[in-house]
Image (cartoon, one colour):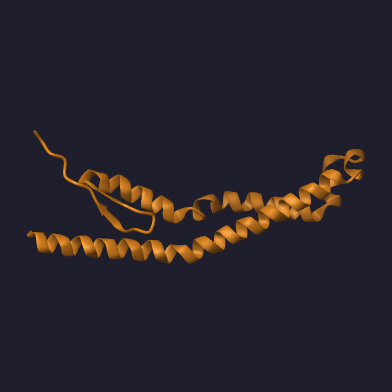
Length: 125
């Protein structure tokens, strides 16, 4: 394989990697927005739950029953984490990190957008 074919292969690989990471961005943004909204709702509900004087006077489950906003948002947040939202909000960086690990063996790396970074070859003496 000559150097022209190798350069074309590298460019094709870079285009495909940047395309794949770029396609993940909209979904990642939506997952991040959902996580932020549910987290803010949970924090707001928790604040209201904690400052309510009735919370100290009734049982734990009764206090949760009295604060359905907090209960639903907390259960939703826990459900999102069990569904793997923590992986979905960082999916592009996971892909880039795994590519960097593989590319390191070929004296290459890539940035967070998928652009290849060619490193100088080590000189063997």
